[in-house]
Amino acid sequence: MIAIYSKTFDERSVRVIRRLLEILTQAGVEVSIHKPLHDFLFLLPESVGSIAGTFHGYDDLHRGTYYLISVGGDGTFLNSINIIRDSGIPVVGINTGRLGFLANITGEDLQESVEKLLAGELPVEERTLMHVTIDGQPVDDFPYALNDTVIQKNAIGMITVHTWSDDEFLNTYWADGLIVSTPTGSSAYSLSVGGPIVAPESQNFIISPIAAHNLNVRPLVIPDHVTLKLKAECRGKDRYFTLSLDSRSVECISGTEIELRRAGFKVKIVKSASFYSTMRNKLMWGVDKRN
Image 1 (cartoon, rainbow, N blue to C red):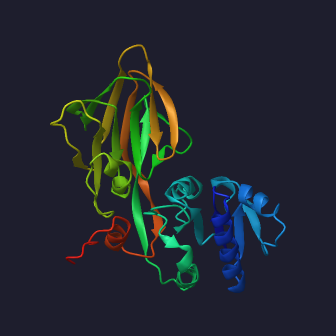
Image 2: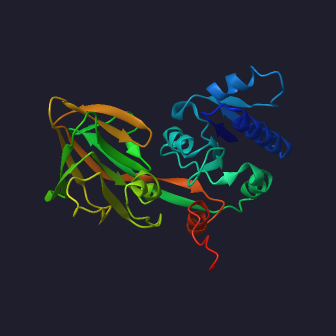
């Protein structure tokens, strides 16, 4: 059984999903589809082939699933982590978005990549997640982030974030916000504010301020075996800030204490290319006539 997930129902994604279903059907693979995607596909006039079942999320995802294939961009890929959770089911990302650091299989490579996947020829990497609590309570029913946890102001002006590492005071950040990322998330939001790119097997967290008021404050890389405590305080009349875990967000009141630590499990990601080749291709390293 292979599960297919997508939150993007545009023309390009549907074309890729149809082709994917065709390849899997020809290979004799049973397929289950995320229910909203299934309902959308069956509204279309063209046939979509044979579907073995549907799923809504983690609770009804068939435990005999070998892979979950995410079709879309990196945002879709991050959403799919909430479906597989700690099941150990590897996630495969087919990119119909833009950059695609996590979802790095293109539509042009679909046939070859799926054939390699079914033959067990694509490498599987394990990636670290962060576990996040608010005032000692889980953020939601899946309080984990694969890319990053972000504290961000809601109004004009700065936010103050007091930071501790294993109960040792680290720094007070005066900024528009603060990003704590995993190595996987080092090439996402953290990179855009000047954070370093960190290889995925590195056991680190990266702390990166967003538009820091103090120019001598720089991103910091720390080991991921520590527990980070963050206390965010709003300035002015606004009393709330936003806390985001990957693509999910909640509003928190000023003074809320947030704890981040390494999760007790990892997720498995199927890659069609190495981390370094992905960086070269996506960030166009070496695109210089001198090379």
